[in-house]
Image 1 (tube, one colour):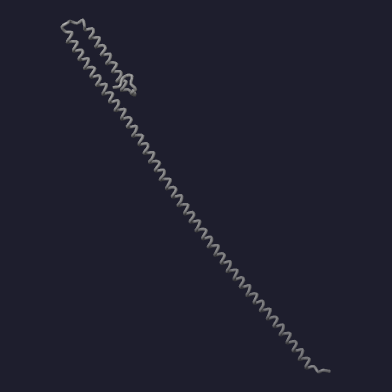
Image 2 (tube, rainbow, N blue to C red):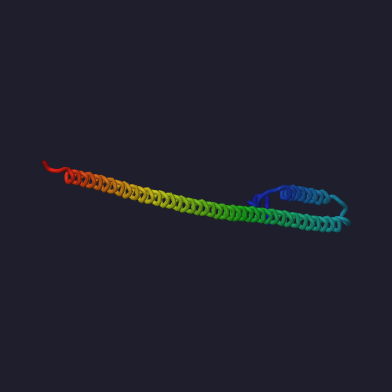
Length: 194
């Protein structure tokens, strides 16, 4: 049982406990004083009265001790309940913290997956765009190459035509020279020699 000099934490109930203990001691002291004052009573009633007073004093002490013990137990129970409530509250806050961390982690993972998905989409779009640009460049190259081939073919045809024209011209010139030479020889043949 705690005393006034114990290290047990004091609260309102324990203060009341010690206050009542002091009161009990005061009552006991007064009862003892009353007993001492009764020494002058008449001889035939002193023993009975002393016994009765002693009995009442012991009963009072017993009741007070029982009351103090009950109050002490109630105080200990309240303290135990308070500590238990604090522990429950601490556990609840810890669970909330862990749940918040888990939720934040899930959200970060979802955001990371979304970021990777968008990155993959951008990379895919970029790859498709590059492939499309490459196909477009190849198509333009093929068109330009075909156009160049057509220009070269046309140029070759023009060159061949020019050569044919040149040959035809030379052939006509030769034929004309041969005709003139034949006419000259014919004139000389017809003209008598003097």
